Image 1 (cartoon, rainbow, N blue to C red):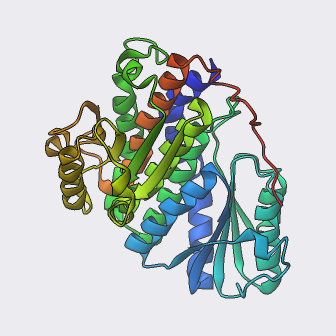
Image 2: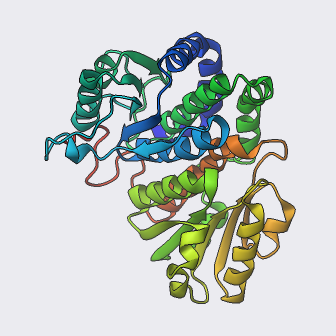
Amino acid sequence: MYLEQEILEQPTVLRRLLAEENQAVQRVVAAIREFDPGFVHIAARGTSDNAARYAQYLLGAYDRLPVALATPSLHTLYQTPPNLARALVVGISQSGQGADVRQVLDDARAQGALTVAITNDPNSPVAQAAAYHLHLRAGEERSVAATKTYTAELMVLAMLAAELSDDDAMRAALRQLPRQAEQTLSEYVTTPLTAPQWVERYRYMEQFAVIGRGLNYCTAFEINLKVKELCYLTGDAYSEADFRHGPIAVIHPGFPVMAVAPQGKTLPVMLDLLEKLHERQAELLVISNAEEAFRHAQNVMRLPADVPEWLSPLLAVMHGQVFAMRLAIARGHEVDRPRGLSKVTITH
């Protein structure tokens, strides 16, 4: 099963990126410092769009850069690209085949913007469209559902943020990440990843919600996407703050909610929300490294105690990947080739 193999390859991919892509990251950072962009503009689709959400918080919190997500239709369908002359424009695409992502880069480069592509194929159209390319070095990903390419995208963005900050503590934290990824997945390797275990409890669920906040806003979206892709369920991803503004009304006894609540700035508000969800008798699945977050959890997914909040999205999503795969198997679905999907999706 390719999906199982690729989930387990993630620590190796992270280690490879640290060893082999650091010089390329340094070259990109030197170009960014010389260009001195006024803002960052990121074009992406699907899973890569969730990596872009991570960049919004990461580059904003640690490098004080405003980050906007591109609207590719302005470049393709409407042919009215915005003014990107003073922007750092980043195209993120696992395959590098996205025509709309490439068009954003083409338009930005023609305007004089600094352009960077992040792909798993240095010979792809998206990679060739940008002035600089960062290679995900994930190897071939044969399962349709992206796992190792997603965490590789997050890793490249984290390496960029650490270099832009010129922060030795951040660099040291990055070096610990492959070990922490192995630790995160270690609870699953005593039995095959494909063993359903407690996920059987959710075999017949019909709807769900995934909630994160801040740096893990992207994690909520990515886990939600994986469950939809593999299990064909209706679910939604929310910021903890947005969830309180109306969607919390859907919660009834037994409603499954997965909450991403690691230690860090967002933990107090996530704990408060977990209390309110418990009062409404929601079925809580919690990903965290804070014991207090597990107080009302029906099922627990632990993160390493020493992972900093800014790197927790790379590990938290691994629990979601395993959950989605096991639930799909419990429901009798093909996990490597979900119905109606292909590995490369071309949008314009």
